Length: 406
Image (tube, rainbow, N blue to C red; front, side):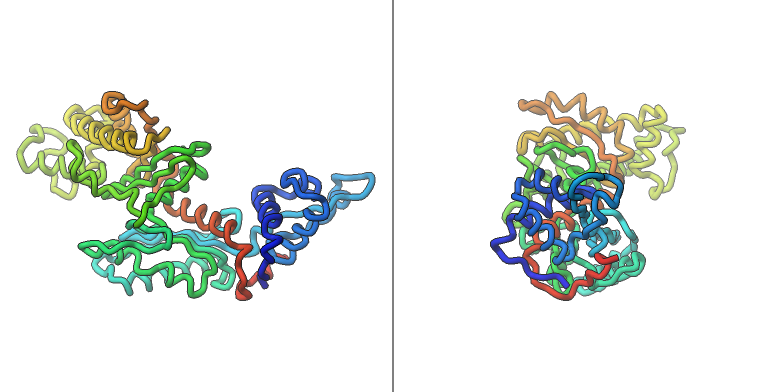
């Protein structure tokens, strides 16, 4: 059972829990030194966290062979298996669900493909619940053991987890009150824009570790951005900070279409206009094989005509990066998403053009190493972050903490 924490003891408990969450097995003296708490306050906090179900006491230092004289120190560790968190990348055409322990260690991950012709609100809500339940079964866990969940959606999301209305209704279909849906049985729920979660992932385990000012450009079929300024993830009043509609009005960009999609459009236009050179590997191919990926592969092998499209894509990326550089002054812009691993040559071109696009120092432009899993990785990190912030404020008895005793 998870018990409520008295307000007057929360500060010391938070300090102790923050230390324990990042530490391996530790002794009480280490906890006192790290938190600055007095011995009596530290011991009270440790015992209360044990009662709460978040810490377990281990055999003391003498029993563990680490102490031989005097009074042995008590040893503790976080109960990482006391509960689980759920992180989900809820794209339009797929749901990738990860179940992890309280340290973020993955216990199960599953991906299901969705029929985009059936993207009504109820269809999506049912699909999300089915994906969560399936992943929990794969992990050998139950709904009663879920402490926190975070879902990333391809839509703006405000601080309350809601997406605004939109002319086409797409945003609300992607986020049909998912927070309310999960809050029926999950104690802590966080809904975020998918690009924002990619930024969380890069800050936690990717190319932005240690940085306080960076932008993650999620380069799927459409562009989206996660923006971190002075260490804070930005949302805006309606969650629209990372929305790319503004690029419709930027000369040299003209839309929020992703780089891979742009390359595909350009090669299709060239084919329709008869501009692909005779005898070229792409000449005469059916349209379903005229893709941005094919262009990138040919350019990488030295094909000059394909490289001309890569040059065009590099100029496009430089302009996009310059807009972010002018608006947010980031140290680094990170290109992430499934397509990122094929854009090295595009980034090379963009880097050479970028200094002429900006008056401010140009941000470092780099590729993410997290691959297609950046959003789900960020969702797990965000779920743990929410759990750490809110778990001591809970007053529920439905969580199954029995694993903490194992």
